[in-house]
Image 1: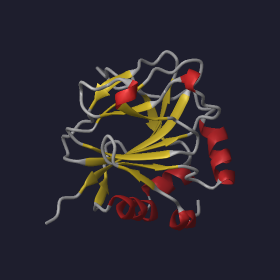
Image 2: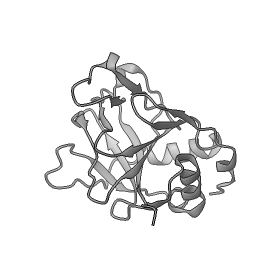
Image 3: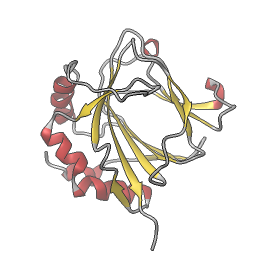
Image 4: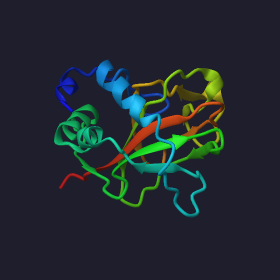
Length: 196
């Protein structure tokens, strides 16, 4: 997959409730529709981790060209330029395709695991035809107490949208339950390299 489109990608940065980035129409439309058709038809082959309270359905991205894009130097450089940090791919997670179904639980407010230090989470939404009745929204919270909709930033899981945010001990977020819809997304995580 040609990554030259990254040079012209428009990124929106937000500071409320904490620093995050939203990129709409990330992939060129023709490429996106082909990938969407392929990946949103995958229903078998997912794994689950033992004792995972979020009951995540995940697998390594089964589209080789897309995996190469998300693992490639051009994408890494794009992320580093966007967030102004030096990054290294979190190799244990690599690049995952995830599926939330109506049987999946909502993800309550949480912060992501910090074993390897501060990291950048990259979420790319694939599923078509989202509307507010379908759920699966990402909520960014000011803290663990202020988790109501009016006190949170709500990001809709619109197709071909990418969201970037730092995982640390202050960036509380949650995902609402999915209804009558499957929420397909691609997740990668990048460790922030400390200055030496």
